[in-house]
Amino acid sequence: MEWGDIIYKSILVVCVFSVSLLVAMYSTYAERKIAAFLQDRLGPNRAGPFGILQPVADGVKMFMKEEIIPDVSNKALFIIGPSVAMFTACMTGVVIPWGTELVIGGKHYPLQVTDVNIGILYLFGVVSIGVYGIMIGGWASNNKYSLLGAIRASSQMISYELAMGLSIVALIMMTGTLSVREIAAQQVGWHWNVLYQPFGCLLFMICAFAETNRAPFDLPECETELVGGYHTEYSSMKLGFYLFAEYINMFISSAVIATLYFGGYNMPFIGRWVHDPNWMAILGTVFFFCKIFFFIFLFMWVRWTLPRFRYDQLMNLGWKILIPLALLHVAATGVVMWLTGQIH
Amino acid sequence: MQALTKRSKVVSNKRMSFMEKIYLPAIIKGMMITLSHFFKKKVTVNYPEVKRPIAPVYRGQHVLKRDENGAERCTACGLCAVACPAEAITMVAEERKAGEEGLYREEKYASTYEINMLRCIFCGLCEEACPKEAIFLTDRIVPSTFERHEFVYGKDKLVEPTAKDERVDITERQNVDTVEFKKHKEYAHNILYTKNTLK
Image (cartoon, rainbow over all chains, first blue to last red; front, side, top):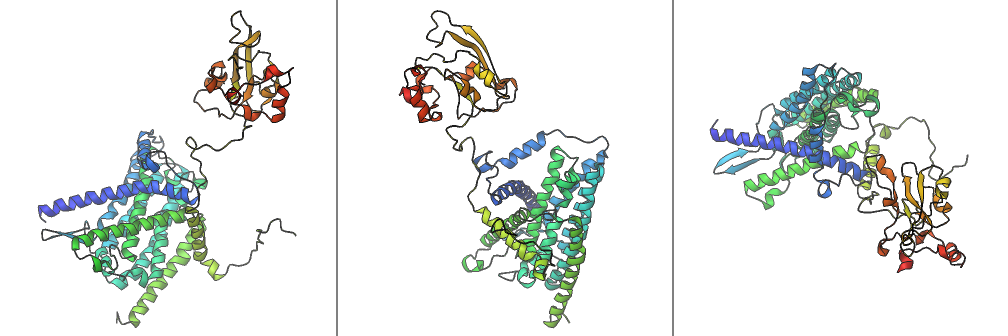
């Protein structure tokens, strides 16, 4: 690897990292605004024009608050919990292809930090480590509400990871690759995977909602029963990290949904008007972000529409409905592929 | 049984049909409802910039009126304090000295006059009890503060300014009959001088 490549990759890593943080930061603002608009309110509008500085104010507040570590908690684990949650949330961004590639001076600069050939496996691996952040935090708090919240969160995430993995298996059977970049590249023009596997996409999206602990699957932090769930004992920026990790996860989930099923950075009809590859790459990235923002909006829209599942309903949906359906979907995909002669 | 409104629905415990069981149509319907609210007119009033219109007879912060020459109307008779069900009003009476005729309308006046705004229930009985048309409730709102003692309003906050264009207008609170009644020559001394009548 040359020095130029290392510098380029470092810049890209910093860019991806800061963009994830920025989007997550403004997701908190967007969430409050969208919640307000859906409820005929105005939302935050005091800090700066249209309340645009609200996330900064919230951040300052989080940092200024007194930091309380309970005496009875396991102090090391108490600190490790939110760190793990934040760390894994930030790590997932590296395998997502944010665009095609820039050509500067005859050199190709792909807009993806690293193209692992098992990118999807990497994603799933990192996301499942995220459960430890919640689990450790809930356990270390030494509080029954935290523990219950953590148990709910981890059992929910583990159950829905199965259905999620199975819905991806059907996609992998069709695309024949585990590399996220190749999956994105295969969806040129209108060959979006959602048009071939609408049902798989639906399954994946439902599981993504559960994986990010968002409504209607937000019972790990169900205020009415569990005070605050796994972060009951947390205060100051440690609490901020947990909340922030949730928003980064939401951003990454939206990016993954957009990449795997909605064509990633591909823009239909773009080839008719734009021929310069650099412009195409930039426009593709912009279009990709539009898709991501739409899915973030969808996450919030669903949250402020649907009530929360009961715990047994959640488990029934996961184990008795989604997993059998996903298995059926895999089988059906195989049969269709066999009938159309894609496999022998 | 007769339905109370046309919108009431009969609830039943029948088994859900397949379409109902998959929930998605209902979810999409619900999301469309929330989306329609996204574009609706917002009900929020941006308070300090925009104020909701309040009735002219609104019972807000009190004012102690001055007469047309700028002399305080209150004579410290104590009827408002007696009438007050919350016992929020206290006062100390004092005799008017020679040369103070321009400051106090009657021969006796209140040297201190305090209303505890935390006790006050804004019923308006003080206003009704006052024989000198000295105290009125206005459409001003008592602002919040952090300290308890700041809610005890003295004469500095209650008596209206002397300058004629800074007087507190309470004409809207008077109905036509009352104003006509006060024009009777036996009660003419009670005609109230407000911003409108001064102009």
